[in-house]
Amino acid sequence: MEDLPPTTVLERDECLDRLSAAPLARILVSVRCLPTALPARIRVLNREKILIASSDPSIVLAAQRHDVLTVQVDGVDDENHTWSVVASGIAEVSPEIGPMDDLLGDAMSHGGQLVSFPASVVVGQRH
Image (cartoon, rainbow, N blue to C red; front, side, top):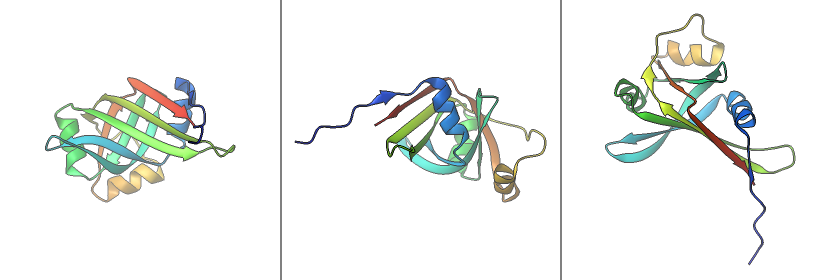
């Protein structure tokens, strides 16, 4: 049996840096009581709030109900280590906040709704 590489817990600031660099993420949401992962464009606002632009009715409905949403991003760092970061919080439908950057603005112009949640729980690890 192979030895598994050690796992390193990432600090909150490093997790937020990795979330901030990710234009696309998986949004974990319950659809008809089943866990589902849906792609969406994201932004981290002031290192405290996650913005999601999505036209998926499951994400918008979850925000209208103030459900907990989770965002997950994964990657490989410069040293070829895999990493994963998740952030969770209670969602809400957000009003459009000024001019959107190209990424979120493009999603919004194609019928997307802006959803947000505070980065209440942020965790990550590197393998």
